[in-house]
Image (tube, rainbow, N blue to C red):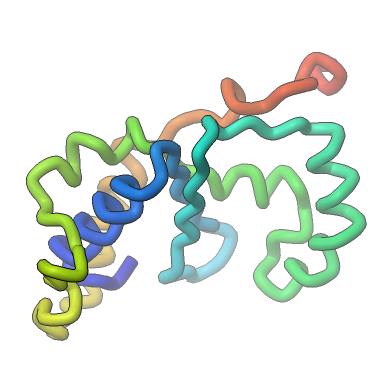
Length: 141
């Protein structure tokens, strides 16, 4: 997220041009300048029972190093899907083979300014993961 703002917009828009459904994840449990962008041909759906089983079996130990070994903290790193950033990236150019704008973008990163702008997007457009979770009824109590 310390990319120049224009490059971050182009990255998101280009990724979304390939995948109709995109989600943006970023943990705030520790200092973090990395985001995870997940693309899919189908809308995001998380079967909570299956997620918890796989998280505890395969991911929990590995995620201790970044303080995400709690499944709630991990799920809280979801920030938005494509509807959350669509308007923000609308005017950005696409990065293509014939128009490789990211390869030739300025490398002058202004960490504080660019980080603030990216965090501003995340803060202003973050959405709840709850609508994307299936089998939630089991855990409401």
